[in-house]
Length: 230
Image 1 (cartoon, helix red, strand yellow):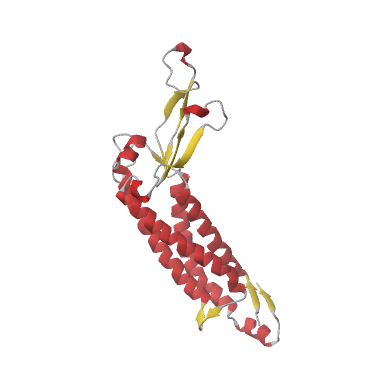
Image 2 (cartoon, one colour; image 1 turned 30 degrees about the horizontal axis):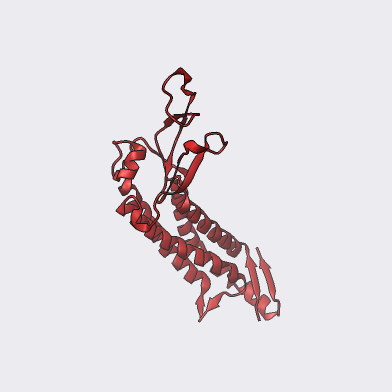
């Protein structure tokens, strides 16, 4: 029989696990890792040659691990004239070997986080498998995922010296120096998600303690199937 056990700490851990997985996935897929130096372009879709060339507008192209956003001259009459999508059609076309390694480490870490997020939903009903606490196992997996994420984030700035980054950030761009670029929200989101990953790993132990407390065991012995504790 399934005993549904809901505690504040286990619910908070479950919610954080889901949020972290989605945050890291969205950051990984985003093109807003580097915000390029401002470029100007006229409304007519070309650089203005004189007074009749149209009013120039500045925009900031963005570059991600495998994606980019830039102005599309063919869409200048539409409100949304930024063209976003992958610049690399295959893994080997990613601009830097360091970014390829970053993609691998982040992908592995995010895959683990997604598995944990899925499993965490079922911890309200199943707390152990083969006499092993699911909370402890998930916490260990989150710690491992966090290590993969850290490796990816450490390697990512080493690729700023690739030609693709130089095209966006200027000739002063080099490893761990973004040149004329600034860091986008996706990079900070990935860092914040990594910190939360380790917080989740630590908090999983508290969730385990809350769901295995004496009060929970007493209510199970009383035959209750739905147990809600603060």
